[in-house]
Length: 189
Ligand SMILES: [Zn+2]
Image (cartoon, rainbow, N blue to C red; front, top):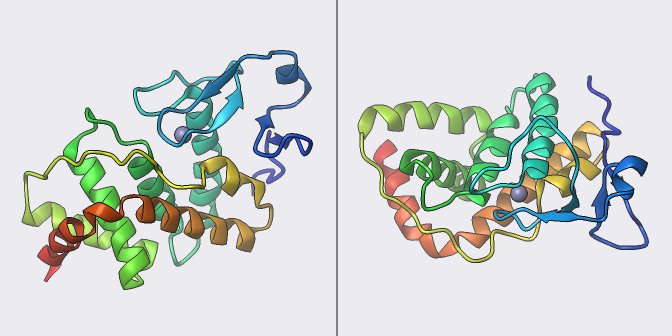
């Protein structure tokens, strides 16, 4: 199991402000993730920023992915992370199938009670049924929770619950596309 303490230090005096420890505290520049809106101190890391996500946000996603992939759970919580993150950080340039599959995954989990494992199976079946996927314009707001909120949860159960809450909040943010997504998911029969 990875160190669930993570590199995150939450500054309790400034709610919502997250830094990466004393070294980063010396830097006063903050980055804002264009996808989820996470404001975080800039730090050196292996990630480059992408059109839809800051480098710092991508590094946190990598940290959470390390956790979910090592979890070995029957539910397969990792799938929710993949779909929540992709839907929250989609841009006009994202591959249509990536955003569509993320939204279908969130729909199946939130509204139809699918496990992550069953969402993964649904993606495989959908990929065989259809080759072209519509492009979705992202909503202005992408949900109240971010990957940083999930990483604050320390125990496995709390963290899994936080991932589910995050997935629900991202799906709620995309609610105007609900009917269209539900009809795509109906391709499953
Ligand atoms: Zn982000």
